[in-house]
Image 1 (tube, protein in one colour):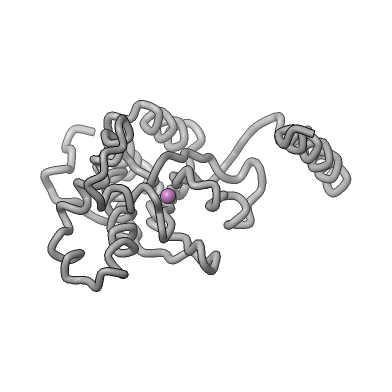
Image 2 (tube, rainbow, N blue to C red):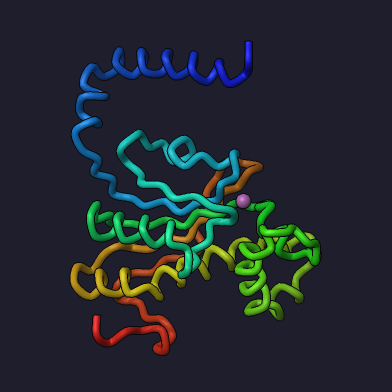
Length: 209
Ligand code: CO
């Protein structure tokens, strides 16, 4: 049997079990989605958002890319953010990285990854901003600290958008969270938080929202 066929078999079993546990499961979810959370995570297959947070279908709106980046020219991310904030009205946005992230690791090298260089360049910018802190660390701690700093920078990038600043001003939501998941123990380390009462470097704050 082709391995992908197993996925379809699993799907049938899952659908059957879901209805057994909760007869209204699909009829309820097919009507509307009302998630409280937007998750911006790494595409890494070892960091499945619903599984590691014990959340179910319908609870988390999800965007994933290499190294959980918030890039202002990324139309995909911006559309997801706009929809989550202004239509779904999420209360929390979680940027979740993970220790040992291959994307961040690649950014710390001088290797040429072809077209992926253009994406990874955004992580190199985080390295450049925090170069002195990272260079003062022991070799084995550098990658994981850059992963934490990257999550903090991506949360800050969210706060730099007019989408977030306007919603903070008018509705005092959403709360922004920076988390880092541990591949070795499955535990999430919350490293950063920002809300409507917090301020960015003033150069990033818009006055005519
Ligand atoms: Co990763």
